[in-house]
Image (tube, rainbow over all chains, first blue to last red; front, top):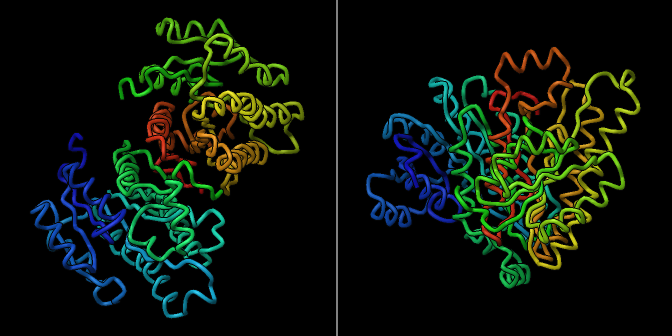
Length: 244
Length: 245
């Protein structure tokens, strides 16, 4: 790959595994310096050993309000600027709303998947608006726009951040900033550990999974468009995905 | 991007010079495909694609005519024997107040944008199902799913129709190995913008709120070159400065 992101500083939250890891490593390969944010300290340590100075690991619990607020200031102190913010960290709840989950778990998931995304993006925008440039990418999900009856909470949480991306895009375009979302179908990541076993087994048998690196290819396509053009959203699914 | 589509045969409707279909045909030709550009005027098509020699196989069709919508694919298969990619792109635009719109023009826009895509898709699917492979792509529009004051009460729903048709067709076509996708562009500098409200057009030009057909073609190429197991049901591409939802 040509070094299309040479000189850029990117932040990826939820970067120690799954889509975040693939996205961060694709950006490193494209020449960016990538701030990898995760609560998994050991995972980040290994990644730091692998990538050296190309990455800046930040261990953080984004659910902690005080820690969350320090993310953008920390990055500005360590890297001096932010060109790309990929708000990717998220968690999953599936299954029956009453039988399979509880209100505390729902609170945490909503906070991580929605509030943290909005707060992180808002903090990054203050800096990007000053510089009159920047790219925001938000990991939404096809669950936000289709009809996954086993995801009555996760689905709407992803609807919320996709809509947040759409409406924020129209506010910040005048500042030279692009905002886009990605809406993947099932991706083989840590999140599927919470799927109902029968659904997981069926999806594996049908190869109804995307690889995180395929999602990262889409992120790179979005980031490398000419600057006057925005990819607002990309839906991507395994071809064999049977949800409408 | 060279030769990513070598050995493939692609059909693009609405391939008249200057539009999205024209740019997509060129992108696929340059990626090594043989391409059947379709439009009403055969002489113009031949002139536009002459430089590609045998790789371009222009075919004339008027997709406003039911008979031609129904027989287009058969006619092309008679010439090429195979269709790997069908890009249903032909479309028309109508703006202006509904009570002032011409009834015949409304009907033409609706027919072309809906059945002009769906009828040939219907005809090409059996061929693709037998082969267990194929890509169907439609040119939708952000107008199919947006809120705006630009008098798109006819054009918008016609695009909603085809995007929704694609969405509901996709899971069943996938079972037969065929991928179905929509590319949903925002304002693109094509001959269609001649139908825009003049004030909107002037504002958009002043603000640079357009993407180019070639940039939409880049999105098409990205969709077509995904690995077989991966599909892009929909990609929304807009000018950055575009403020409509």
